[in-house]
Image (cartoon, rainbow, N blue to C red; front, side, top):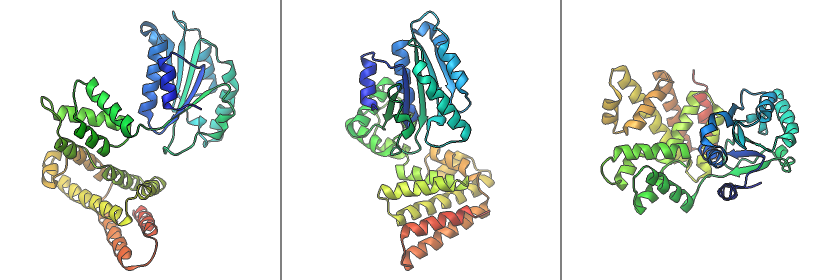
Length: 341
């Protein structure tokens, strides 16, 4: 198994393998690395013919085989990408397991002119690659890509700003890296947003603080969003992630209360006919965040939001007066809110 650094070194040296299985919790990094392989191996004039993309969620092993067996057009190499190949993960239906077994059986017969790339997404960065793939390491190159961190992350962000013709100071870069969600798609979106916001002038620390939501705020939004969509397992996973990161249960609860308060106010304002600009101004919310919360408010009835907030207040009293594991109180609250109809 190789990591991101090893993969990048091999791509730079034009060392390519016949078959890759790439896993990461950050799809954007995977896409960037696949693009790097394509640029190094495929003639751009014939890219449409020699770079085949297959949806791993809607595929049969026969589709993979037929596309691999077809000769490249006017070139020495072709690439077949099977994206979101969830049948390679450690869970799935009987049909997915069947595709897995038949695909792995074919791997050793992939023609030398073809580079076959699979990727699937890990739900969490700490998740391990499917152990069943390890026994095929003689035929496939397993790649586990962790997210960029520390100085590496800051350098990556700096290069992304520079690629857009925008400079960012050391202090501002540090603040941006500390505030933005560590996900390359989110990072790219926040960079675009910041560049547009500061057109014609330098980026300041205040710009970043005003424009980019706090990481924990984003987690709380995702937690409440998961609850509204009745994805209780996802909500509990986010709760566990926040606690794992050291956020105190009492702080998590206050953030959830604030979220429901905002959703109630936003829903009332929308019902009165106010637009997102007026709502963001009255509630002193960033416009981008406000638009997001307006969409979220549509998942709820006003009565349901009020009941959810009452459950939060009851939990706050329990945290202050009863002896028990604080995390347990939060889990019970999430279940109670989940039960609201």
